[in-house]
Image 1 (cartoon, rainbow, N blue to C red):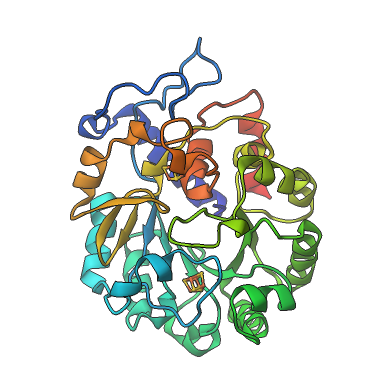
Image 2 (tube, rainbow, N blue to C red):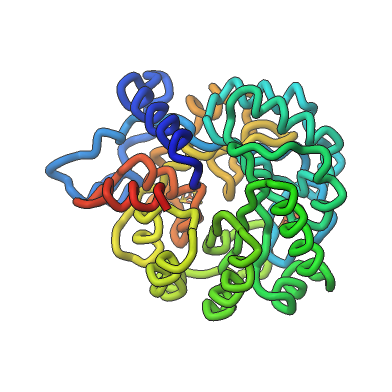
Length: 363
Ligand code: SF4
Ligand code: SF4
């Protein structure tokens, strides 16, 4: 995720502090070592990366509610939590979760966060705690609720757009959503807000259309673009829309050219991973998820348990049992919430990474 330089420096200092003084109780493995195909498979075995065995959170995925005003084809949330869609967290629970986990970035997602009645108060309180915030929305209610927020360099609206009008409206299963979301983008930019967009890449996605979407959005002043491979949710029955690792690498093979043209929010190392140019281990503890059922473990995609405290999530999850080669559910996973922390932490780093990262930040 891309923030102004001063905030990126703050994130670098947070990472350095945790590297130097990792919490010992979070580093214990609960099952036997997974072997060479485990989640910590290191490309340079002669120089194990110092981040191995140093678990801590970077981004809190905060889901105040799962209710939504859409029923998108690829959405795991509204399916997995269909029986508890009426539940929501209180603002106090959200803030307690943020305090407990202390991740410097909070991604407020859901469900549709703009349906959360206290969303303005929640964002204000998180900013008062100096959190950097991405509010992930489908954009349908953005114009209506804009007055509940104040522009801040630490606060982004992250608007879900999976293609141009026809494609997007088909994937969200309702006509008119694309147009309203784009009106929301324009209104937010006019009002001085930071705006990014989030595009999920499915098996059927035409990457030329994605490029056309970014060409359409750039003149509107969009500050950054996130392109993510679709999650293979077990809760979504239609397996045909999700991709294998090979499919993902094929889709992202031309991503460097797009990254030169547009401000992509993904780090250069994560883009390398999506293209198959480097291996990364899963570091799911870097993006923990909190929702009305509790702390979701092990990750944003897989639910083996809900824990009542962040401490329990960190100490009772057998982290070393997940990742490619350990759990069949992880086999084709390349999602940003599992692998972007690995890139940000410099795992499996290569010569020149720091320069590329600096260039990415400065852009
Ligand atoms: S807008 Fe988001 S939460 Fe709502 S159905 Fe679509 S993907 Fe799911
Ligand atoms: S599904 Fe993905 S993010 Fe979750 S543990 Fe497996 S590899 Fe990591």
